[in-house]
Length: 123
Image (cartoon, rainbow, N blue to C red; front, side, top):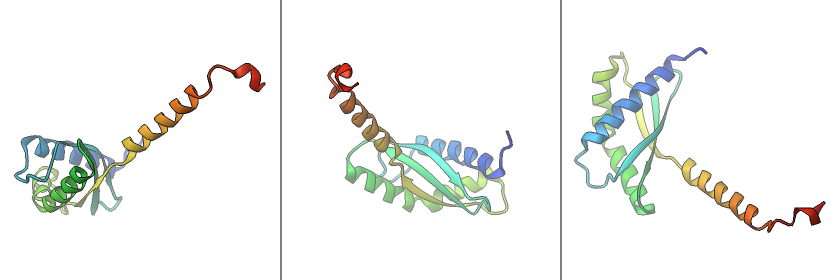
C-alpha cells in the first residue's frame, strides 16, 4: 500500500500534539482532550486536528476555543519536530464521530429490543 507524504506528516502531527497536550498547556479552558485524528491537505499547508473532550457542550466549546487560541504555540512546536520548509496551519475541530456512532448503536439496540423475538410472525 502506498502512503502519501501527507499521511506521514499527519501521523507525526498526531503524536507531537498528543505529547504537547499530555505535558499540558497553560489554558484553563482546555479540558481532558484526546486527539482522535489528523487530516493534512495534499499541499501540506493545512492540518485539521480532530479531538474529543470529556464533559458537556460548554466544555467542548471552551476546549475548542482554548486549543484554537494555542494554535500558534502548537504550530511553533510542530515546526521544531517536522523540520519542513512550511509548517502547516492548524485548525482544531471537535470530532462528532463518536457521538454519531453512539447514536447509531443506541438506535440498533432500540430496534433489537423492540423486536421481542416474534420473528416467526413477520414471515
